[in-house]
Length: 154
Image 1 (cartoon, rainbow, N blue to C red):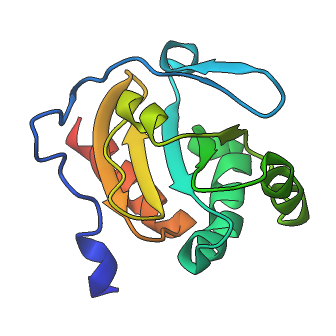
Image 2: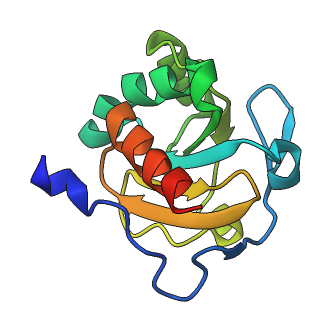
């Protein structure tokens, strides 16, 4: 689809392929996730909300991406704009989310990148470099295509 051809925003403010600020996030299970812990894997960080229809559309796609071992992609979901943490966690359970969920704040986004709308997604390469960002829903195929193109370039 043409609309997805250019969906990844080149991180225009000059961070493309430069080591990213190391993030440290604690998920709903209390596990700490650091960018350095994922060296050798692609890391997709997705900001979302339970009230956001496009976010809900992409959850099954992100779950499939996270569970596909051959792709070597770790997905971390950061829930924003919620009133009740329990509601977010119950929602994630109902949606069969298998990737870690972080109960986030907008201040937390400073570790990763701006969130001008939901969903917003950032992708780090296996060396820990921030290589792309996207505003709007994604599919597993979109991410696979992007990773394949990046792998061919190297």
